[in-house]
Amino acid sequence: MSLPDSRGVFITFEGGEGAGKSTQVARLARTLRARRSVVTTREPGGSPRAEEIREALLAGVAKPYGPFAEALLFSAARIDHLDHLIRPALRAGEIVLCDRFMDSTRAYQGAAGGLDPDAVAALERVVVGGTRPDLTLILDLAPETGLARARARAAGQGASAPDRFEAEALAFHARLRAAFREIAEAEPARCVLIEAAGTAEAVEAAVRRAVAARLPGLLAPDAERVDAA
Ligand code: T5A
Image 1: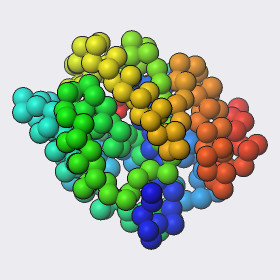
Image 2: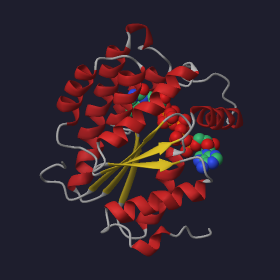
Image 3: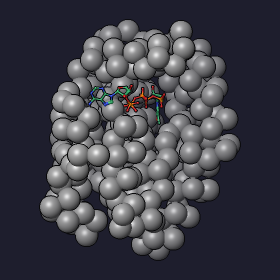
């Protein structure tokens, strides 16, 4: 369900570490910008105050307090992000492409972190309310591959240590993948599972197909083709 006064379109990208979400947000934004005004954003973060909370979360500041405290901090960031960026952009009729959103809390703090699903659902109800994504693209990839991609990128950027969640054991990442797949299965009207093991171009083509099929007003069917750029 979208905001009652929303004229925009809200698309979220989800998946495990290094699945290619940021890459695909940028590629879809480039395609859509030819037609409509697009805002790209991310969670945690997306607004100045939420970006401050992001730093603390990824540094592991909340980890000792457990998954409920972490979920509360992700929620605090989400409230600010929704109020200051997402809802205003949707009201202005823009397309909002968001790298992670509420499904990451379900998967990371809930399914993989062990937080009671009722607590996750209650938080979602009060924090997200009616601002549900119109479409969620879940990039599905073996965690070993995603973590290797994330590590290679970090090495290229001179970063040495993995962040709070990259540092979790492989079993945690396997639970994450299963959780995202379950979300896609449980909410087929909102979610599309995208096979993310192929090249960035192949994944982009799958993303375009999903957008053209689910939101036909945004992308003409022939826009599924990825231009050789
Ligand atoms: N979190 C977040 C929670 O626990 N709860 C929550 O509620 C929320 C919102 C955010 C962390 O916070 C957690 C989840 C995360 O652990 P982050 O740094 O934003 O931290 O982490 P990620 O969202 O996982 O972002 P990553 O950048 O690690 O992954 P992406 O965006 O999925 O991947 P991307 O596009 O940056 O690609 C990674 C590398 O692979 C290459 C790219 O060039 C890049 O080098 N690549 C490919 N290589 C081969 N083939 C392809 N198809 C490729 N696509 C991209």
